[in-house]
Image 1 (cartoon, rainbow, N blue to C red):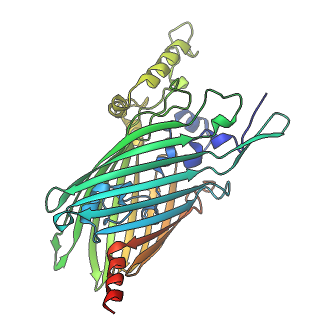
Image 2 (image 1 turned 180 degrees about the horizontal axis):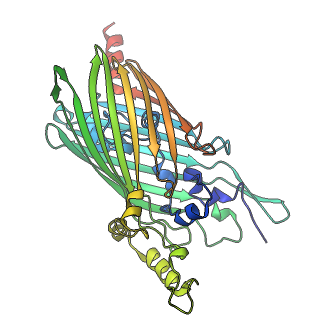
Image 3 (image 1 turned 180 degrees about the vertical axis):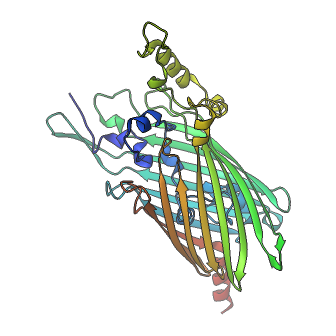
Length: 412
């Protein structure tokens, strides 16, 4: 009996979060070699502020959503505590029931707030998926989803430098259990950790005090995830993010921040059959060396997560040129008026052979005494990109502001 899901279950799973757009010339198709991982939704930017600046945040000013970008920033946050909720309708050009919900919060404590505890919960829903048999009759309905919950601790180690660590539990249920012919398939669980650092200084340029910050975050270092009881295992999207930010005043109450994030997935490349052909001087010249390819594929699945991190720097079939193609970057600007009104824009670039996600982003933000609201919008530079018109919304609450309101009411 044949089964199929709405638009093919998860479109190969990772496609819903990457869905590359690539010119279909023979040369491009042959060179197209993106890094494959499990639970790819862990890489989706959850909040509107970072999403409006080209998906960056390793070195920007700390905010409540720093848990995703760089949790080491929390000890430098302006407020002692905060919480936020974000919502992203995902791939609205294709379907209307896929979305990402994200909740984050932090609390600074210790002398002068040099330590911080933080936590977040992300839930990516694939909506309702109908399973039909070969005749088109509905036999089941499943609700695939992926979630992650984490807890972090960060501490200021000097006046200008801090570090943080996050522990994360991940669960991915793609709904395979709803297919009667896939009794051995189930949801996959994994554990991971992040290690991050952040430094900020205030140089005087001319007569103005500016702010320069840099940070790094190595995220999702952990176990593999499997949907078939360990027969095959997928790497988590372990990622190295390095960011820089330069903020300077441009007039009274007006500031402008220039931000840059550079990323590289610390995941080895899966072997491609195209790279395993017999030499030209062989009697089988041009044919696939199936035995060598299968062995390479087995070695890939047997590679451990830590070994995979080191292997990811030197395993590209195209050598160092292809290794450099695996680096993707985000550039963003943030204009602020009196720390109350914000206008943001950015650009995200990924090499066309490694996913080809390229888009511009725009956003605005408003901050009042107690809460702030941010919105972001994606304009894809590739005409047929499904990321086009993606929106994000974030609502944040400043616990100091709420506490201040309570004190004012009490005094009255």
